[in-house]
Image 1 (cartoon, helix red, strand yellow):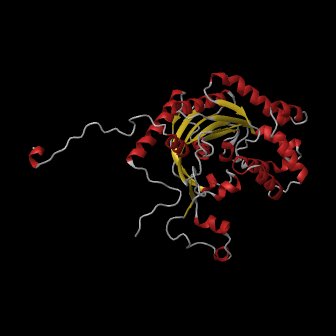
Image 2 (cartoon, rainbow, N blue to C red; image 1 turned 90 degrees about the horizontal axis):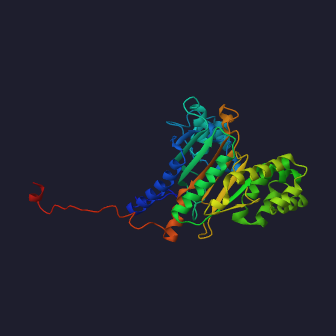
Image 3 (cartoon, rainbow, N blue to C red; image 1 turned 180 degrees about the vertical axis):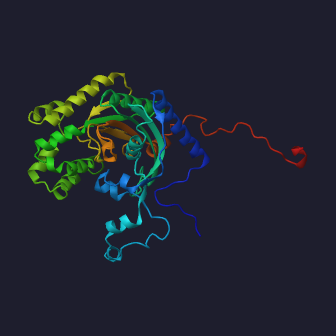
Length: 370
Protein backbone atom coordinates (compact mmCIF):
# COMPACT_ATOMS: atom_id res chain seq x y z
CA UNK A 1 0.00 0.00 0.00
CA UNK A 2 1.32 3.43 -0.92
CA UNK A 3 1.40 5.68 2.18
CA UNK A 4 -0.66 8.86 1.94
CA UNK A 5 -2.30 11.57 4.01
CA UNK A 6 -5.93 12.74 4.00
CA UNK A 7 -6.22 15.86 1.89
CA UNK A 8 -5.83 19.12 3.77
CA UNK A 9 -3.49 17.63 6.42
CA UNK A 10 0.28 17.75 6.85
CA UNK A 11 3.21 16.00 8.53
CA UNK A 12 5.82 18.14 10.28
CA UNK A 13 9.48 17.16 10.39
CA UNK A 14 11.57 18.00 13.49
CA UNK A 15 12.67 21.40 12.13
CA UNK A 16 9.09 22.33 11.31
CA UNK A 17 7.79 21.03 14.64
CA UNK A 18 10.37 23.12 16.53
CA UNK A 19 9.37 26.21 14.57
CA UNK A 20 5.70 25.58 15.34
CA UNK A 21 6.61 25.17 19.01
CA UNK A 22 8.27 28.60 18.91
CA UNK A 23 5.12 30.09 17.35
CA UNK A 24 2.79 28.54 19.93
CA UNK A 25 5.09 29.51 22.82
CA UNK A 26 5.26 33.12 21.61
CA UNK A 27 1.49 33.41 21.40
CA UNK A 28 0.93 31.60 24.71
CA UNK A 29 3.41 33.83 26.55
CA UNK A 30 1.54 36.96 25.45
CA UNK A 31 -1.83 35.43 26.38
CA UNK A 32 -0.61 34.69 29.90
CA UNK A 33 0.99 38.13 30.16
CA UNK A 34 -2.50 39.63 29.87
CA UNK A 35 -3.90 37.34 32.57
CA UNK A 36 -5.60 34.65 30.49
CA UNK A 37 -5.83 31.06 31.76
CA UNK A 38 -5.57 27.84 29.69
CA UNK A 39 -8.37 25.34 29.13
CA UNK A 40 -8.81 22.35 26.82
CA UNK A 41 -11.93 20.79 25.34
CA UNK A 42 -12.41 17.41 23.59
CA UNK A 43 -11.73 16.84 19.91
CA UNK A 44 -15.24 15.37 19.62
CA UNK A 45 -18.38 17.34 20.44
CA UNK A 46 -22.00 16.28 20.21
CA UNK A 47 -23.44 17.36 16.86
CA UNK A 48 -26.25 19.01 18.81
CA UNK A 49 -23.56 21.32 20.24
CA UNK A 50 -22.08 22.19 16.85
CA UNK A 51 -24.97 22.26 14.38
CA UNK A 52 -26.82 25.52 13.79
CA UNK A 53 -24.07 27.78 15.14
CA UNK A 54 -22.10 28.51 11.96
CA UNK A 55 -24.82 29.07 9.36
CA UNK A 56 -25.76 26.64 6.61
CA UNK A 57 -22.36 26.85 4.91
CA UNK A 58 -20.52 26.19 8.16
CA UNK A 59 -22.76 23.26 9.03
CA UNK A 60 -21.91 21.74 5.65
CA UNK A 61 -18.19 21.85 6.51
CA UNK A 62 -18.54 19.91 9.77
CA UNK A 63 -16.84 16.52 9.91
CA UNK A 64 -19.44 14.06 11.23
CA UNK A 65 -18.33 10.90 13.04
CA UNK A 66 -20.26 7.66 12.52
CA UNK A 67 -21.82 6.04 15.58
CA UNK A 68 -19.94 3.11 17.08
CA UNK A 69 -20.69 -0.44 15.98
CA UNK A 70 -23.21 -1.30 13.28
CA UNK A 71 -24.33 2.28 12.62
CA UNK A 72 -26.85 1.20 9.95
CA UNK A 73 -28.60 -1.42 12.08
CA UNK A 74 -31.38 0.85 13.35
CA UNK A 75 -31.62 3.24 10.40
CA UNK A 76 -35.06 3.76 8.91
CA UNK A 77 -34.81 2.27 5.42
CA UNK A 78 -37.11 4.82 3.76
CA UNK A 79 -34.89 7.93 4.08
CA UNK A 80 -31.90 5.72 3.30
CA UNK A 81 -33.44 4.56 0.01
CA UNK A 82 -34.58 8.10 -0.79
CA UNK A 83 -31.06 9.43 -0.08
CA UNK A 84 -32.51 11.91 2.44
CA UNK A 85 -29.11 12.81 3.85
CA UNK A 86 -30.21 14.95 6.79
CA UNK A 87 -32.70 12.38 8.05
CA UNK A 88 -30.14 9.59 7.74
CA UNK A 89 -27.44 11.72 9.38
CA UNK A 90 -29.41 12.11 12.60
CA UNK A 91 -29.64 8.33 12.85
CA UNK A 92 -26.03 7.38 12.07
CA UNK A 93 -24.01 10.22 13.64
CA UNK A 94 -24.29 11.88 17.04
CA UNK A 95 -20.81 13.41 17.23
CA UNK A 96 -18.51 15.57 15.13
CA UNK A 97 -15.01 17.05 15.08
CA UNK A 98 -14.99 20.57 16.47
CA UNK A 99 -15.24 23.28 13.78
CA UNK A 100 -13.79 26.03 15.96
CA UNK A 101 -12.95 26.64 19.63
CA UNK A 102 -15.59 29.30 20.36
CA UNK A 103 -18.76 27.20 20.35
CA UNK A 104 -17.15 24.47 22.49
CA UNK A 105 -16.01 27.25 24.83
CA UNK A 106 -19.60 28.47 25.20
CA UNK A 107 -20.65 24.92 26.06
CA UNK A 108 -17.72 24.72 28.52
CA UNK A 109 -18.77 27.95 30.26
CA UNK A 110 -22.32 26.71 30.82
CA UNK A 111 -21.20 23.32 32.10
CA UNK A 112 -18.58 24.81 34.45
CA UNK A 113 -20.27 28.09 35.39
CA UNK A 114 -20.04 27.27 39.11
CA UNK A 115 -16.33 26.46 38.89
CA UNK A 116 -15.07 29.63 37.17
CA UNK A 117 -15.09 33.32 38.12
CA UNK A 118 -16.60 35.94 35.83
CA UNK A 119 -15.38 37.73 33.86
CA UNK A 120 -13.49 34.60 32.84
CA UNK A 121 -10.40 35.09 30.67
CA UNK A 122 -9.35 31.93 28.85
CA UNK A 123 -6.98 30.91 26.12
CA UNK A 124 -6.96 27.67 24.16
CA UNK A 125 -4.48 26.29 21.61
CA UNK A 126 -5.85 23.17 19.93
CA UNK A 127 -6.59 21.76 16.45
CA UNK A 128 -9.93 22.11 14.67
CA UNK A 129 -11.30 20.48 11.50
CA UNK A 130 -13.27 21.78 8.52
CA UNK A 131 -14.22 19.93 5.33
CA UNK A 132 -13.11 22.87 3.21
CA UNK A 133 -11.40 22.74 -0.18
CA UNK A 134 -7.63 22.74 0.52
CA UNK A 135 -5.63 25.58 -1.00
CA UNK A 136 -2.83 27.95 -0.01
CA UNK A 137 -3.32 28.88 3.64
CA UNK A 138 -6.44 26.70 3.98
CA UNK A 139 -6.32 23.22 5.47
CA UNK A 140 -8.84 20.68 6.74
CA UNK A 141 -6.91 20.17 9.98
CA UNK A 142 -5.36 23.25 11.56
CA UNK A 143 -4.57 24.84 14.90
CA UNK A 144 -6.37 27.82 16.32
CA UNK A 145 -4.99 29.93 19.14
CA UNK A 146 -8.02 31.50 20.83
CA UNK A 147 -8.25 34.08 23.57
CA UNK A 148 -11.66 35.11 24.98
CA UNK A 149 -13.29 37.02 27.82
CA UNK A 150 -16.78 35.95 28.87
CA UNK A 151 -19.07 37.54 31.43
CA UNK A 152 -18.64 41.26 30.68
CA UNK A 153 -20.15 43.75 28.21
CA UNK A 154 -17.26 46.21 28.57
CA UNK A 155 -15.62 47.31 25.35
CA UNK A 156 -12.31 47.61 27.18
CA UNK A 157 -11.87 43.91 26.42
CA UNK A 158 -12.18 44.55 22.68
CA UNK A 159 -9.37 47.07 23.13
CA UNK A 160 -7.30 44.62 25.19
CA UNK A 161 -7.65 41.90 22.56
CA UNK A 162 -6.56 44.38 19.88
CA UNK A 163 -3.43 45.15 21.91
CA UNK A 164 -2.76 41.40 22.14
CA UNK A 165 -3.05 41.11 18.35
CA UNK A 166 -0.66 44.03 17.92
CA UNK A 167 1.89 42.56 20.34
CA UNK A 168 1.78 39.04 18.87
CA UNK A 169 2.43 40.15 15.31
CA UNK A 170 5.00 42.75 16.36
CA UNK A 171 6.89 40.04 18.28
CA UNK A 172 6.74 37.71 15.28
CA UNK A 173 7.93 40.47 12.94
CA UNK A 174 4.85 40.45 10.69
CA UNK A 175 3.41 43.83 9.67
CA UNK A 176 -0.40 43.65 9.69
CA UNK A 177 -3.51 45.77 9.37
CA UNK A 178 -6.20 45.26 12.03
CA UNK A 179 -9.63 45.81 10.50
CA UNK A 180 -12.59 46.57 12.76
CA UNK A 181 -16.34 46.85 12.21
CA UNK A 182 -19.49 46.25 14.23
CA UNK A 183 -22.33 43.89 13.36
CA UNK A 184 -24.76 46.56 14.59
CA UNK A 185 -23.39 48.86 11.90
CA UNK A 186 -24.14 46.14 9.36
CA UNK A 187 -27.62 45.80 10.86
CA UNK A 188 -28.02 49.56 10.38
CA UNK A 189 -26.92 49.24 6.76
CA UNK A 190 -29.50 46.48 6.24
CA UNK A 191 -32.20 48.65 7.83
CA UNK A 192 -31.37 51.73 5.77
CA UNK A 193 -31.29 49.64 2.58
CA UNK A 194 -34.61 48.00 3.49
CA UNK A 195 -33.20 44.46 3.68
CA UNK A 196 -33.30 43.71 7.43
CA UNK A 197 -35.18 40.48 6.76
CA UNK A 198 -32.19 39.33 4.68
CA UNK A 199 -29.50 40.35 7.18
CA UNK A 200 -27.89 36.91 7.44
CA UNK A 201 -27.77 36.43 3.67
CA UNK A 202 -26.40 39.97 3.27
CA UNK A 203 -23.55 39.44 5.74
CA UNK A 204 -22.63 36.04 4.29
CA UNK A 205 -22.38 37.63 0.84
CA UNK A 206 -20.38 40.65 2.06
CA UNK A 207 -17.99 38.33 3.91
CA UNK A 208 -16.85 37.01 0.52
CA UNK A 209 -15.87 40.44 -0.77
CA UNK A 210 -12.13 40.13 -0.06
CA UNK A 211 -11.91 36.75 -1.78
CA UNK A 212 -14.10 37.29 -4.82
CA UNK A 213 -14.75 41.01 -5.34
CA UNK A 214 -17.85 43.16 -5.78
CA UNK A 215 -19.23 41.39 -8.86
CA UNK A 216 -19.52 38.05 -7.06
CA UNK A 217 -21.05 39.70 -3.98
CA UNK A 218 -23.54 41.56 -6.16
CA UNK A 219 -24.61 38.33 -7.88
CA UNK A 220 -24.95 36.52 -4.56
CA UNK A 221 -27.12 39.29 -3.13
CA UNK A 222 -29.37 38.93 -6.15
CA UNK A 223 -29.45 35.14 -6.45
CA UNK A 224 -29.24 33.93 -2.84
CA UNK A 225 -30.70 36.86 -0.92
CA UNK A 226 -33.23 37.55 -3.74
CA UNK A 227 -32.68 41.31 -3.53
CA UNK A 228 -33.78 43.62 -6.34
CA UNK A 229 -31.07 45.56 -8.17
CA UNK A 230 -31.76 48.92 -6.49
CA UNK A 231 -31.40 47.42 -3.00
CA UNK A 232 -28.20 45.62 -3.98
CA UNK A 233 -26.76 48.91 -5.21
CA UNK A 234 -27.85 50.62 -1.97
CA UNK A 235 -26.13 47.98 0.19
CA UNK A 236 -22.92 48.16 -1.83
CA UNK A 237 -22.91 51.97 -1.66
CA UNK A 238 -23.35 51.93 2.13
CA UNK A 239 -20.54 49.45 2.84
CA UNK A 240 -18.15 51.72 0.93
CA UNK A 241 -18.84 54.65 3.31
CA UNK A 242 -16.61 55.91 6.10
CA UNK A 243 -17.81 56.56 9.67
CA UNK A 244 -18.86 60.17 9.03
CA UNK A 245 -20.87 59.25 5.93
CA UNK A 246 -22.59 56.37 7.73
CA UNK A 247 -23.50 58.62 10.66
CA UNK A 248 -25.41 60.87 8.27
CA UNK A 249 -27.13 57.87 6.69
CA UNK A 250 -28.09 56.36 10.08
CA UNK A 251 -30.39 59.14 11.31
CA UNK A 252 -33.36 56.75 11.35
CA UNK A 253 -31.70 53.53 12.57
CA UNK A 254 -31.09 53.19 16.31
CA UNK A 255 -29.11 49.98 15.99
CA UNK A 256 -26.78 51.49 13.40
CA UNK A 257 -26.10 54.50 15.63
CA UNK A 258 -25.50 52.15 18.56
CA UNK A 259 -22.88 50.34 16.50
CA UNK A 260 -21.12 53.64 15.68
CA UNK A 261 -21.23 54.61 19.37
CA UNK A 262 -19.64 51.29 20.39
CA UNK A 263 -16.95 51.81 17.77
CA UNK A 264 -16.16 55.24 19.25
CA UNK A 265 -15.97 53.81 22.79
CA UNK A 266 -13.66 51.06 21.55
CA UNK A 267 -11.27 53.65 20.10
CA UNK A 268 -11.31 55.60 23.37
CA UNK A 269 -10.19 52.50 25.28
CA UNK A 270 -7.68 51.51 22.63
CA UNK A 271 -5.34 54.50 22.11
CA UNK A 272 -4.38 53.47 18.54
CA UNK A 273 -1.31 55.72 18.56
CA UNK A 274 0.32 53.37 21.09
CA UNK A 275 0.15 50.42 18.69
CA UNK A 276 2.78 49.31 16.20
CA UNK A 277 0.19 48.19 13.61
CA UNK A 278 -2.60 50.19 12.00
CA UNK A 279 -6.23 49.81 13.12
CA UNK A 280 -8.73 50.76 10.42
CA UNK A 281 -12.51 50.84 10.20
CA UNK A 282 -13.87 48.75 7.34
CA UNK A 283 -17.63 48.64 6.76
CA UNK A 284 -17.16 45.72 4.34
CA UNK A 285 -15.91 43.48 7.16
CA UNK A 286 -18.77 41.11 8.00
CA UNK A 287 -17.44 37.88 9.57
CA UNK A 288 -19.87 35.30 8.20
CA UNK A 289 -20.40 33.35 11.43
CA UNK A 290 -23.90 34.08 12.71
CA UNK A 291 -23.10 34.24 16.42
CA UNK A 292 -21.28 37.60 16.21
CA UNK A 293 -23.34 40.53 17.52
CA UNK A 294 -21.04 43.52 18.16
CA UNK A 295 -17.48 44.56 17.34
CA UNK A 296 -15.74 42.28 14.84
CA UNK A 297 -12.09 42.07 13.83
CA UNK A 298 -9.96 40.69 11.04
CA UNK A 299 -6.19 40.84 10.63
CA UNK A 300 -4.32 40.65 7.34
CA UNK A 301 -0.85 41.34 5.96
CA UNK A 302 0.15 42.87 2.65
CA UNK A 303 3.47 41.01 2.68
CA UNK A 304 2.00 37.65 1.60
CA UNK A 305 -1.16 36.81 -0.35
CA UNK A 306 -2.74 34.33 2.05
CA UNK A 307 -6.00 35.70 3.51
CA UNK A 308 -6.77 36.71 7.08
CA UNK A 309 -4.36 35.67 9.86
CA UNK A 310 -6.63 36.38 12.79
CA UNK A 311 -10.26 37.28 13.41
CA UNK A 312 -13.03 37.39 15.97
CA UNK A 313 -15.57 39.55 17.69
CA UNK A 314 -18.29 40.03 20.29
CA UNK A 315 -20.97 37.36 20.81
CA UNK A 316 -23.64 38.68 23.16
CA UNK A 317 -25.56 35.53 23.99
CA UNK A 318 -23.90 32.42 22.58
CA UNK A 319 -24.22 30.60 25.91
CA UNK A 320 -28.03 30.99 25.80
CA UNK A 321 -28.39 28.06 23.40
CA UNK A 322 -26.88 25.89 26.13
CA UNK A 323 -29.18 27.25 28.84
CA UNK A 324 -27.28 30.24 30.27
CA UNK A 325 -28.70 33.53 28.98
CA UNK A 326 -27.28 37.00 29.34
CA UNK A 327 -23.57 36.10 29.40
CA UNK A 328 -21.73 38.17 26.81
CA UNK A 329 -18.29 37.30 25.48
CA UNK A 330 -15.67 38.54 23.06
CA UNK A 331 -12.73 36.72 21.56
CA UNK A 332 -10.20 36.45 18.76
CA UNK A 333 -8.61 33.47 17.04
CA UNK A 334 -5.11 33.35 15.58
CA UNK A 335 -4.80 31.04 12.56
CA UNK A 336 -1.57 29.27 13.44
CA UNK A 337 -1.18 27.52 10.08
CA UNK A 338 -1.37 30.69 8.04
CA UNK A 339 0.90 32.56 10.44
CA UNK A 340 3.40 29.69 10.17
CA UNK A 341 3.23 29.84 6.38
CA UNK A 342 3.84 33.62 6.43
CA UNK A 343 6.84 33.22 8.75
CA UNK A 344 8.16 30.50 6.45
CA UNK A 345 7.68 32.50 3.24
CA UNK A 346 9.26 35.66 4.69
CA UNK A 347 11.99 33.70 6.52
CA UNK A 348 11.27 35.44 9.82
CA UNK A 349 12.32 32.60 12.13
CA UNK A 350 14.81 33.59 14.84
CA UNK A 351 18.28 32.12 14.42
CA UNK A 352 18.84 28.83 16.21
CA UNK A 353 15.26 27.90 17.18
CA UNK A 354 15.45 24.70 15.12
CA UNK A 355 18.91 23.70 16.38
CA UNK A 356 18.21 22.57 19.92
CA UNK A 357 20.76 19.72 19.96
CA UNK A 358 24.03 21.11 21.35
CA UNK A 359 26.09 18.04 22.42
CA UNK A 360 26.06 14.54 20.93
CA UNK A 361 27.80 11.70 22.81
CA UNK A 362 28.53 8.62 20.67
CA UNK A 363 29.68 5.13 21.73
CA UNK A 364 31.76 3.52 18.97
CA UNK A 365 32.43 0.12 20.58
CA UNK A 366 31.32 -2.21 23.36
CA UNK A 367 34.03 -1.01 25.77
CA UNK A 368 32.59 2.49 25.64
CA UNK A 369 29.42 1.18 27.31
CA UNK A 370 31.31 -0.13 30.39
